[in-house]
Amino acid sequence: MTARHLMMAWLMLVGLSLGSTLLSLPVMDHAPAAALGLGVLLIAGFKARIILTRYLGLADAPFWRRGFDISLTLFCALLLGLYLAPLML
Amino acid sequence: MSDADVLEELPGDLMIWVLIVSELLVFGAGLVAFLAVRITDSTGFAEAQAVLNRTGAGINTVVLVTSGFLAAQAVLWRNALRRGAARIALIAAALLGIVFLIIKGAEFAHKSALGITWESHPFFTFYYLLTGFHAAHVVAGVVLLLLVAWRDTSRNIEAAAAFWHMVDLVWVLLFPVIYLLQ
Image 1 (spheres, each protein chain N blue to C red):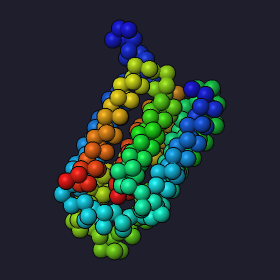
Image 2 (image 1 turned 30 degrees about the horizontal axis):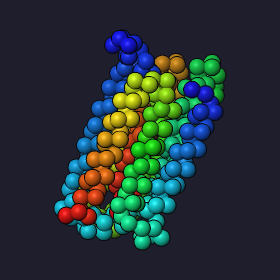
Image 3 (image 1 turned 180 degrees about the vertical axis):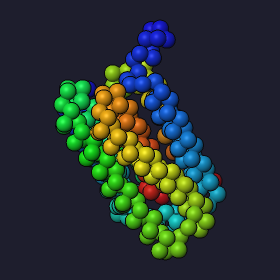
């Protein structure tokens, strides 16, 4: 891990945090809820991955990174399913 | 790859990873329960969520990821034997943790002024439990960061930074589910 990697990770986290907040603004109300939910959860999953790989150092531990990637993807998919459930009932 | 190799690949102490996974499971279960209960009253949850200050929470996200960056930078600096710079980064990270708590406190005070308690609606029960429990972790993290700024061995700083990144990680999952998913 280098200082440059850390700086890039921080910039991406700040940008993605602003991006997910923008997705929830009233101007986005016309967009389909499913698309907004998917966007917000994708960004959340990506931010979590950046923290795991760059801040916590899993970039240098491919076995554990894969494990966390799979777990995180399944968890976000579960959250998305639960979020969309009221729209389908 | 043998079991020993796999464990050695893990950065930092094994026990801090046990703690990280345990905390993620607890908060993850809380978020799953939150969205599961929401299925029974999605309109009520949306109305309750509209009271929240998304901008404040968004600012708090930037505050926390910036604090995490400083903690990670402190590890790099300490390993490069730049002890002074590492200490300053740790203290700055702790101060940003305090900023997070001040914004969170203002948010709770605003809800209280509106007469909103954890009993007002199931949404607020989860809101207070999950964000309050997370804030308790922020308090613990701030104390840890200041402690390792004082007792600044590489191992201490790595452990405290890993705890702080866990607090960060929980928030980036909690923030969108509680504040943003409408």
